Image 1 (tube, rainbow, N blue to C red):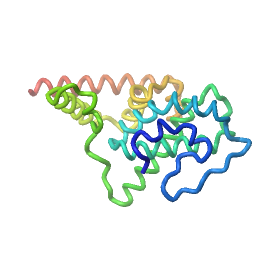
Image 2: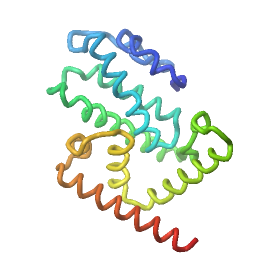
Image 3: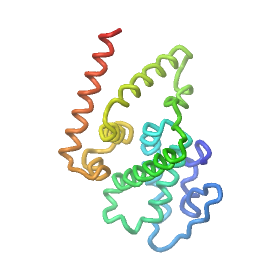
Image 4: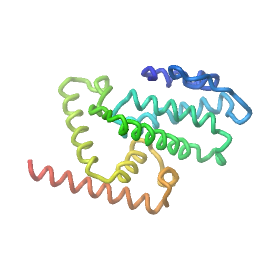
Amino acid sequence: MAERGQLRSDSGGLLAGMVRRRGAPQVEVDATCPDHELFSAIFEEYFPRLMSYATSRLRDRDLAEDVVAETFKQAYLRWGTLRDQGAVGGWLFSIAHNVMVSHMRARARTGLPLEDSPVEGWADMAPSPEEEIIRQDEAERLLRLLARLSPREQEALALRFDGGLSSREIAEVLGTSEGNVRLIIFRALRRLRQLMEAEEGRE
């Protein structure tokens, strides 16, 4: 499993040997691989967004780091298949989406649950234990309500608000149209608002 924080500081190492996961063979660099400066710039731009997206969906920061590491590894190896470098964001998130689906299926087969703590790592952001508790309560409430949305609605919201993708990029990841993406997000947000209002009315 990737060491926390290692990926962000090791963009150069990604180019020579990629992310060396335990027992993984070194990746050969060939003519189809991107140059060092280009891939480093892409890594720096998209690493935080991919981490936010993966952590939101998996609720496990360590597993999210593994997913992001595998995403960049596959992107590096498959660079020659990217037809439009201007669409690299949607392409990276498509890879991450597929890697996560594989992880989830593997866990489902083994019966291993995903972590139940979605706010791991937030302690450093909270100025006091009281505010940390409030943040955690709010996050857990939101995640509880999000779980009542359809998987496609959850994915679209994560790509939009955690990944920061545009409707066009989300459409590429989900394999649908921009108009349908906007409709999915609109309905998901409306449903969330209804769920929140219903919950507040019971309190």
